[in-house]
Length: 319
Picture 1 (cartoon, rainbow, N blue to C red):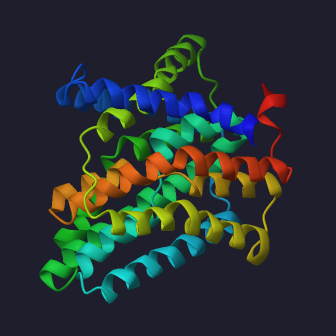
Picture 2: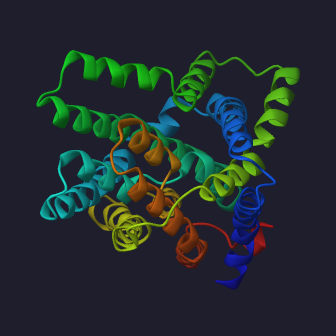
Picture 3: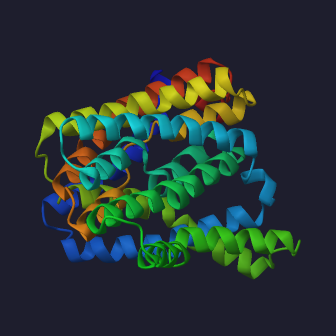
């Protein structure tokens, strides 16, 4: 456990560094916005393209793991939605709370951290989860919010969803990477070096940006944020573990990566959706802040459990 914690600590230390820089106003909100944009559109996209270009489409689109993850995530999504409806908060706010309960920071935190901790074999399952989160549940949130406002799902709603998907650089970079892989073209050495250098900025840049963005987050409605953080950090990985180990068993390595990915804290893009539509942004903000702080411990616990189960080698041995 201590070995795993020490391996994850540098990643969260970078998050803390970003938080401290922004909290002290050494790093302004404008600087955070531009750093996030650089990571999102350039560094992380280069990393994802390079990973995807070296995978086959079927390394990611594996029906059994995908269905297992989808089923587990949907179960927690429905639970969080039902809890919101029980409190009579409305469909739109319940949709945002459900997003907080299941959408983890796979892009900015999961891809760079888990690929290093669990090995490059983790990239395929991680990208599968990222695709499901972005395409299925990201679209579902928009449909539920706009549908609840207009009383129905219109063509404009579907157009908004479609535009959002094709303009998301993470989806575009993955799609382009798979297209390159399908052509079976080798990546030219200068291009590969360029992508490696640019993609190398994704890990420190993304983690620093997460911390800097947390400095502007509020911690209102802590009881709700605590419940949603419990859903994300405990119930979601537990549901995924139940599906991939018992209901629809997959190979032990893939199962370990999927469980670790599900254990990640609430993603920042949930706040972006909430802010854009004016639906419970403070609740999403508090959930991101609370879950990220707690995940310093819980992610280490989950990865230590996975290592103990033999899904991956010990981080100490790997290093």
